[in-house]
Structure formats: C-alpha cells, structure tokens
Image 1 (cartoon, rainbow over the protein chains, first blue to last red):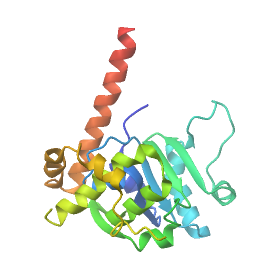
Image 2 (image 1 turned 180 degrees about the vertical axis):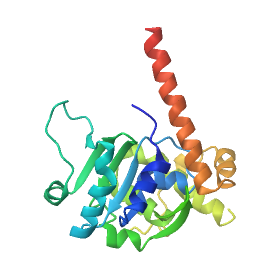
Image 3 (image 1 turned 60 degrees about the vertical axis):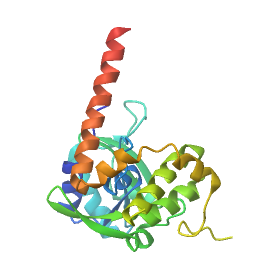
Amino acid sequence: MMPTRFPELLRALSEAGVEFVVVGGAAAVARGSVRLTQDLDVAYRRTPENMRRLVKALSSHRPYLRGAPVGLPFVLDESTLRAGLNFTLVTDLGWIDLLGEVTGGGGYDELVRHSSELELFGTRCPVLGLDKLIDVKRAAGRPKDFEVIAELEAIREMERGG
Amino acid sequence: MERSSERYVDPVIEAYKKDLDRTLIRENLRRTPEERLRALMEMQRFAVELRRAARAAR
C-alpha cells in the first residue's frame, strides 16, 4: 500500500464540485487526533448530479475495489454508485471510502449539519465535528473504538480548557 | 435511552482516558488542521517504510 495523498484527493473532489463531508479517521486527525489512519472517508450526497461529479473526480485515478481479486470487472460510474451505497476503493492517490451512509450518523444531509469547513490544502472542505464524530463512534459500538472515543472526548475537553 | 455524547459518561471510556498521552494531543492541537493531516501522511510513509524493512529482514 502507499500513503494516502490527502491534498490531491481533496482537491479532486472539490474541483469537481462534489458535495461531501470528510468523516472517520481523517476527520478525527483534522480535529486533533494523533492516531494513524490509512484512508480518506467521505460521506457523499446521493443525488444523480453529485454522483456524476464524484465519478468525474475519481475516474481518472483508476478507482478499484479494495481487496478485490485482480481482474474482477469494476467500473466506477453512476450506475455502480446508484446500485451500491458504501464503497471501499483504492486509487492512484491512495485509499478512499465513499460512504452513502454512516452508522449512527446518517447520510450526507444529516452529517453536513454537524460539520464545519476547514481550510485544507488550498480548498475549503466540510469536516465532521467532534461531537458527531464521537456519536458515530459510540453508535458503531466496537471495542476497537473505545480508545478513539476516549481521545476525541479528551480533545473536546482540552479545547474547552480542561 | 438517548446517549448524547455531551451528557453520557461511560466508565469504560473514562478508564481509557487515563492512559492517553495528553502532551502529544496538546502538541497536535497547536497545529492547523492541514498540518495535522501532513503529519498523518508522514506517519503513513514511516509505517510503509517499517513494513518494507520488516519484509526485507525475513
């Protein structure tokens, strides 16, 4: 695997006009987490126009299903996006997860209400806020997330002067 | 019961908080969000290099 090229991925999405919210580990890092994460998770709006933009943003970067056997036919196009919901992809720019819905967080319309725009690599990107990140991790209910929740809550406390 | 993250105090999570390195987090909070993501990419590169070295040592 290769390091994820966050600047190029975020710029590709922004320049294509994709409506998305950065969620997951990358959002946690942007908010202050020091944990290692490998991919960029984005929640995308599932309108036909936005799915067209998403395809435009990623199609030149050779998107392929992560972990799928080599040679398995896969084309990231609007019909693929319409037929599925969440996609874990590898691209020339690294790993990206496209999420139509996030457990405990809902879809783009719900998540964007709990995000704020951050200046990242010359573009302004909506990034999920700490409160919702914590709610989503709690909703996932996975023991592996306990440390993450503890860290995110500590960040929130520290930002409030704790 | 609704468990809003603002109100709900989970004793398991509180136990995990005791082991956090807050100096590391405090240092990270002094960075901009972009600097934090750049630091993450550096960590990823380091992890890739470690894996490569481990494979070569086998």
